[in-house]
Amino acid sequence: MTKIRVMVVDDSVVVRRLVSDVLAGDPEIEVVATASNGKVALQRLEQTPCDLLTLDVEMPELDGIGTVIEVRKKYPKLPIIMFSTLTSRAAEATIDALSRGANDYVTKPDGVANVAAAREKIKGELVPKIKALTGVRTTGKLPLLRSSASPAPRPTTSALPVHRTGVITLPTPNRPITGVISVSPPRSSIVSAIAIGVSTGGPPALQTLIGALPASLPVPVFIVQHMPPTFTTMLADRLTRSSAVPVLEAAAGMKVESGKVYLAPGDYHLVVDRGPMGTFLRTNQDPPECSCRPSVDVLFRSVAAAYGANVLALVLTGMGSDGTRGAEYIRAAGGTVLAQDQATSVVWGMPGSVARAGLAASVLPIGDMAGEIVQRTHAQTHKPAIGQG
Image (cartoon, rainbow, N blue to C red; front, side):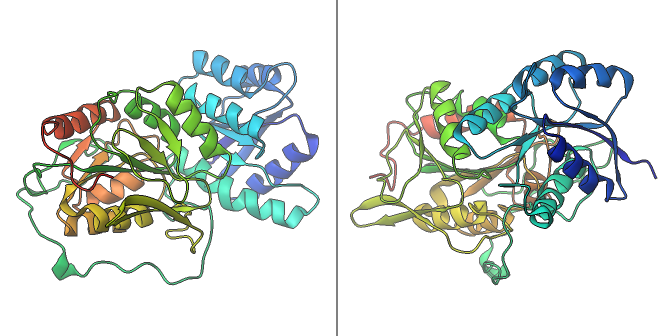
């Protein structure tokens, strides 16, 4: 069996040893080299080829961001996972590293004093991402938060409309799913809300998508990106700086307004609640769903209830299958679901699950998503959007 060759880069001897020991305990992974900073890592990459790099954010001589920039010059396809603390400074640097070519990130254990807990965190979060980014099939769950709570209910089969007009061809190693798949009813004449679910590879994908939306966007956008607290704050700020539309970290009680983007806060589910006084946001810390909080399924269920057939949902790059159950609710309500294609996804887990379930009206490259949103919303700008305010 060919093992996944990993290089561990961190300025802490303790962290390097801890990560290396955990990874070496997996039969599918081999730690082929370690390095104390980015400068050393670049030298060792020349001598010891690897399949993936784990990279500390804050290091002397050449830090994580600088290392990502240099690695991408010579190794544009080498998967990189940032290994970051939960501080504001590290979160901002991690978001920057992701925008410059890093593929994903894992937050470090709060401390290494509790070695057993630190090992479990690394094993539960870093190992599945290493395997996903190198193409090894995993259990399909994103290891963020675990819960023994009962899973959310699915809509009954009889409640799901069947409008398939074509046959879906499942991907083969040489032929990924891409292009339009005719599985949905004709487009609704009105789109009143956009809902987006995304995980691994999300920040660059969102920067591409949200950055291409016009300031005249006539509907609100709701996003769940699998990220912890602080990281979502930094991501909202970065997206706002590079977009024509304002991106806000959602907070309980916010009134929904057209032309604004609302990003679920880390560790909180985001719920859209429409009532006689208008449409407002709610957040909660109910049990994780699909091992995630925030969960795409939770958001999608709420927008299906609030906007019915007038929802356009997008499922973008990410591990696992969060969003598939929520997409069933959106389809049952008459809404439309789009999925990012395999070629432009960092990990084709979430969008692939939706596509295979026959829930996606189209499977599109990330670069085409904004145009699709504009086409579906701006044709109606002369009409009042439903459910706003």
